[in-house]
Image: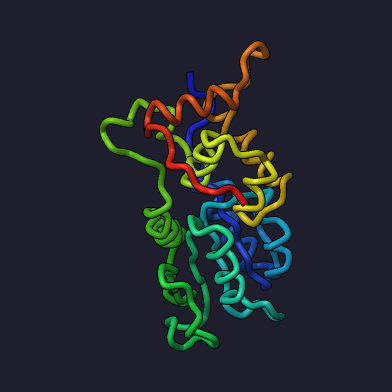
Length: 219
């Protein structure tokens, strides 16, 4: 029996305390797990351990790196992570450094957001490409509740990679990988029987659904 459905994690990066708290509260009430940060540096420090599916960030964070710098770092570090710019700039072209804006990010003018429902709808729209599989043949599959990041993790486990190799490939810390593994195995309800190896069971589930993964060179 599943113990944990897909819980969306959002990292909110905003230097204005009131706006940061407001956005965080709106998303928490909508069912998201939220972590807030005042600067890009704070967000990067928290990123691996929190492993968000989405980052909502202002462009101007008061200090460098700014929101665009942060988005570009995270796009390389975690391509699965959706990016929403919630900013006073009316569009991407008007933002400083706009030439470097990740192509799939969403720009939202703060002044255009008139309700909490509208903000949640925008966030949901940005998450569409990061949503877990939902095809008819996987509706009853435990994998249908996992995030794209968790599915990638299972692929590495099925390939026999160590935590250190996974961390190097993801550009994250070993502790961040350990936390992601623990959450993934918990979502698959594979940690309740000490007589079984949950990592081996997880690899088996992945291979049954997707076949043996194509071998790639570990870092």
